[in-house]
Image (tube, rainbow, N blue to C red; front, top):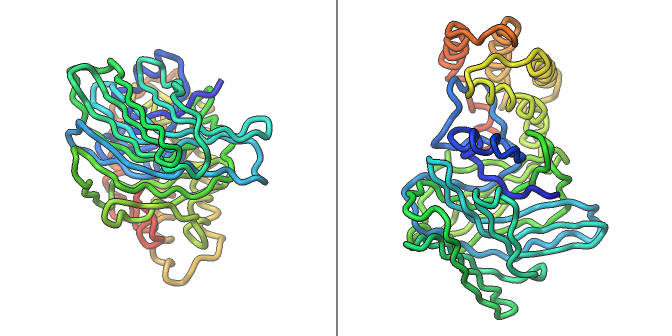
Length: 358
């Protein structure tokens, strides 16, 4: 069964405990307001792409046209949504799902939250290209979810008695490659039209973003979508090309391998030898690609810096403790020192490639 639309930051910090206890699938990414302790080189930056704004939030809104799946596309699953999130494991979202199952495209409006274990709750079947307006407002009764299929003239409002009295500190506008089972098992991503979010709002005003609020959607199917900068109150996506696409493809396998390690660091436990072996092998592969691939001359210095960063973590991971050896404070300290000492190299290459930092 499809396990769709997981919140981003909640998986990395407080929500991780709840989600693992529920035995539901996880997406991985990092958020601007919450990092795993002792953050190591790289970060799982796949599964989600768009914007997250960290601030107290009681309203979030946007509109978009339902992305059309190309006729020639194979089966796959995607979703487009807005959401709010809190630091105490609360999350609720509203948006559209774009799925192709047994060669039949299906488009629906859905909502989901923690209480329903993130399973999408279907509200309305829609058509590709329909213009849909969405707003989510916190009330004393929970969250009021409003959607309006402007094209079909079908407005509707539902109130979900969820997280009453809770404070939310994150608003999100994302496109997602959903998961099913396990930590990194992503469903096939279909060939879907690029989405444009417009009329974005947070607390009844236009959101103000910084560069750190963006993240790239990277998929195991080789789809890399970069959110554009927000102009007025809208943004769209662009397919990564050239050196940017090359880099995102290079780093994908390592970022996927890194996530189980980060989970172990969260729990302050030693990773298994399998996790570390996979991490080291993908890091070695990344180092080889950075060294042997052709890069534009303007990127020479940044690529060398990235190689130094990779080498520093490769050296650290060679002697990192594995289970059943307990995770020592000295190992955590060494991880922090490597991160600190190589900070100047971090994100330089991404910046010169025109990519967000995550």
